[in-house]
Amino acid sequence: MVNGFDDLRSRCRGRVVAPGDPDYESLRAVWNGSIQRHPAAILQCAGTADVLAGVRFAADRELPLAVRAGGHNIAGLGTCDGGLVLDLRALQGVRIDPRTGRARVQTGITWGTFDHEAQAFGLATTGGIMSTTGVAGFTLGGGVGWLVRRHGAASDNLRSVDLVTADGELTVVDDESEPELLWALRGGGGNFGVATSLEFELHEVGPEVVAGSVVYPLEQAAEVLESWAAALPSLPDDAMTVATLRTAPQDPPFPEQLWGLPVLSVSMMWLGAREEADAALAPLRSLGRPAVDAVGPKQYTAVQKAQDPYWSPGALNYWKADYLRGLDREAIATLVDAAAQFSSPASDIKLAALGGALARVPEDASAYGHRDAAILLNINTRWDEPAAESTHIEWTRELWGSLHRLAVGVYVNFLGDEGGGRVVQAYGEDKYRRLVEVKRRWDPQNLFRINQNIPPGGDAWTGGEAFPRTHTTVTARKRRESSV
Image 1 (tube, helix red, strand yellow):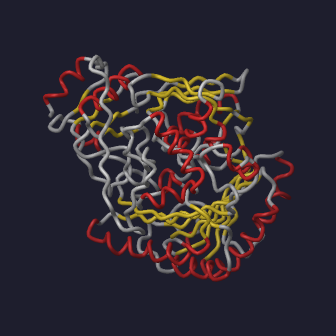
Image 2: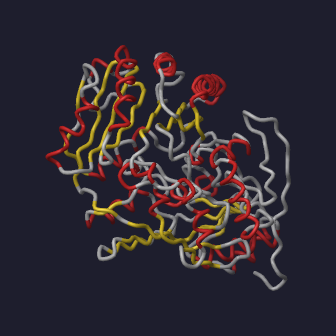
């Protein structure tokens, strides 16, 4: 099959990298070191023409087709075994228009690049809490970040998409040309094509915001978490907060006496007027007797990069997540007990506040949903030694299982390989049926199936950890004989 890629090479500006090529091993790697897959070839797309050629090539030859941008997907859905990977990282164009408050970006960029360009004009949109996360995958899966309570999800700010569809054609998707497809792209993931550029609504943010963390020793965590959860319903939209149980690293703002110990870190950001920050954030800064309070003026771009050192690529990762309707005392006790027994010091448990502007968008406005959830739970387990995998996975599953009774759904961007039943839970049955209809129109043969898949037949495959596995093989669509 490797020699069969010569025709693709002749049609592309970008390189086609195959096993045995000097940089194949580095190019096949994705952020989650637990994912080790070996594609038959990697096309380093140099532009939209290469994406068109790659999609047509894979469809004609019935090859598995994966699409990689940032590569942060926890399930490793930006790569595959034995197929073709479209690597979009060279697509780095960014255009910020401060007159219209819009950004047009190509889909190889990360949020660090986006923020660097937009902040030159004091503008931003809802992005990831790591600067190395890819803009495209984050947005197409919904997109929850520091600005979500003030400006909604990233997908709520998505205005148009240039999309290469399964028939190998480029479609401009917006509310006027293809409103139903845009509805599906706002949260439905990579099921409908390959995005080559995205247009966003921008908002005045920064360059300086009030942000930081208040850190508590674990013995105060139960009391503080109960007060934190109680404060969420009355928070103004300009306030965002994430409570994190973690092992304190040897870095500021964590005090030396807590290094290496489990702690609770209550992080926050205020987007309103500076003179209102102290009063607005007081309910989040007076929850107990903190070891340190590091909240103050900071560059927005610095806040966006603050988590990068702790989540570098290559480590082994396993996540479980849910949207929660809230926290009760039993759940808080479970969380604190789990933090006292982290299976790895590199792991953490994040609880992100939702509500605000996110909750006021009508539930049927986009594929992204569960807008009535109060909290987004993400159990991030991370380690280096492969032999210890079962210990870490068991710890994660046990904690998640104890909290799942409070779940109202799941965020598709945080899903691992958990089965089609969980994909349905990410959208709810009504939205899922609507997404199936969009899939039938735009990808009836399920060429784009290496994702949290929505099969065009509507038969959500089941499997993974929570459901008995069955196997459904879907053949990629053949293009017309005259295609590339």
